[in-house]
Image 1 (cartoon, rainbow, N blue to C red):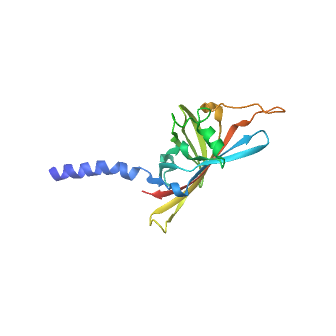
Image 2 (tube, rainbow, N blue to C red):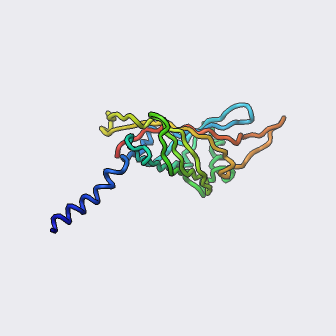
Image 3 (cartoon, helix red, strand yellow):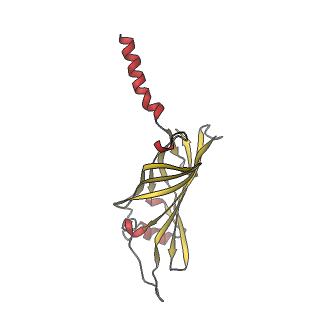
Length: 196
């Protein structure tokens, strides 16, 4: 009887493991979180965050069970101009001292087509959290990483947000009309994942 109870306990504990999606961790050395925003009404300024961490749960056989949990280090912002980076870290924008991380936690993972997904979740910048949907491509196919020996997968994701929705409202009028910084920000993420 005791042996039967032990087998039942093991079976019950094992069910979530088989039902859950495969766990992956973000390979920060091969991941890029980039953004682009209109500058002085005439060109686009591009930048990136060099430090990102997090995990992904994904099984191509059950993508609806997938999830993403990401943290981006605001202090790692890089627009190729130190003075501008310092301003972006200041209270006018990200306010690094108070809010050192940008986070994204998914709530819904939907397959659109083979290798294409819509991932909806909460994006938190500063103290504001808004629902955002990422258009994701990739994830389906993996390969054995020759350096780590682990399975790897890759994906790209895009989204557009209004920076003012997250409290990034600073701007300045420019001569001849218009504003220094556009409101719409295009996000481009290229991520490489390693099996845990």
